[in-house]
Image (cartoon, rainbow, N blue to C red; front, top):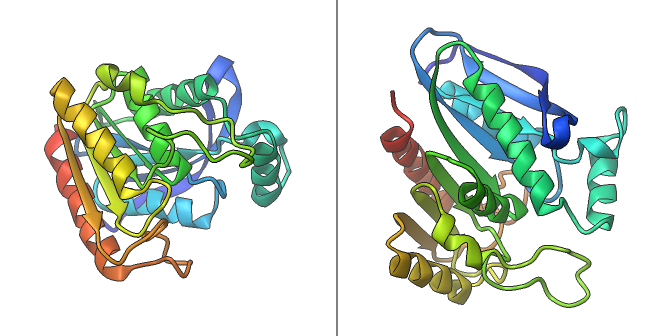
Length: 247
């Protein structure tokens, strides 16, 4: 770990060159380093997401979290932006892919970048991580309890997300999946279907399901937080990125 980091708000070019607010953190040392795009959860671009970005920087990566809801207006609070985006059914898939591509390009343009990019997402960001890894050339992807990769959202949810299982043949990189046994979205059966499909395709993946953990077990600011699962999950994330994003 390195406790000397820079962190702050930047602007990145997203889908169709849209200007997105983003939170960036990077080590101050001059060692070559991989980059990590952090895809925030459905509640939006919040302090918890920024803390995750700083955590990656402290472990030697440059990391950025683009505000996927930036298009809802400059000067609008993150909570209001999130509410407006959810009312529209979420972020369109094509837009998400373009935004992640822009964030990855921003990381690779930084001094000391080694050209390798990881993507990680939580909740809706887990599905979007899988989508990005099937749509872009990524070096390592981490799906933290991403729902609706296999199943469609429940009727009446208002979400426009659709299954992206059919994109599995295009998965461009190793995938780490971290799930809760007590989760319903995705439930263990959905995780099993995804694992079986990736097995069939010969796609490298490593899935872990934690007992007594449900959705959002990484979220330290929520009742869903499960310390044992989260601590082990972070260990697995850094081991995984250490193997795939090194110089």
